[in-house]
Image (cartoon, rainbow, N blue to C red; front, side):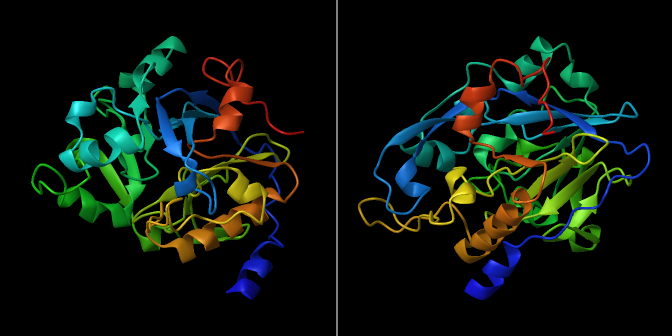
Amino acid sequence: MATALKTMETGSALPKPSANQPYMQISGLQAGIIHIPLDLVIAKESRIRQACPSLSFYLKHSNSDRHFIFDLGLRRDFDSYPPEVKNKYTTLMPCEVPQSIAESLEKGGLDPAEIERVVISHLHFDHIGDCAPFTKATFILGGEGKASIEDGYPGNPLSGTLSASIPMDRTVFLDREDFNTSIGPFPHAADLFGDGSVFIIDTPGHCAGHINVLARTSSDGAWMYLGGDVAHDRRLITDPEKQIATAAADGTPYCMHRDPVQAGVDIARLRALVNLPRVEFIIAHDWKWFKENLENAFLPGKIVPEV
């Protein structure tokens, strides 16, 4: 495994832009704050709670009206979450929602009811938000998450997945055959619009159906990777010495990922990707990026691509 991870970190070249290459303009969206214990994220950290955003993003195609939202953040009505979520996270990871995803869109001049697509990285409580305002959108999820919805709360009172997380009649689940291309160090990807502007990336280490987004951000070779919960702290990507936590500071077994070995593979692939020229990344709970970019990178502003 160590040899395989080392090989991944050498990276693979990304495709060169075509003539008149389409790309995505990306804006951040506020969608709540979650206080995450760092000892549950990075091995050997102390029990310190870090106030982290639960980020969402608006992506607009450069050459057409195509657009989508990536992730919906937290629900303001915490009582509407399954008891499993409320009982487990109310004290472990306190949350607040000063500005919901719908409010963030409206503040940026967009109507949630007019959004075309919503891509959900996965079905955990801090990413599903409230789908109700998105009355016309097609939802896109990783196919392995379908079983969690079908066995969700309240049908299964013990489930931590809310069945109402998504409108099932407007949802497309991406199955293995849909990830029919590779890009950079990632072996399983789907070209969302078929023009090389944005790819859905299969990253199953965190949980069933976990997906990420890799988007071009310029016509001449800049890229942005939106990582969801591929990692819960950017230091796991930027510092190879940092390792995923598999136990709390007091020694209690705990891991944020269902498969820490595969999560390590996903992180190694992302590390290889961001070592390539003009590639940036943001993860869902990226508190450092949030603090540094709150002024200009959030709708109606845009994230400026790397030059």
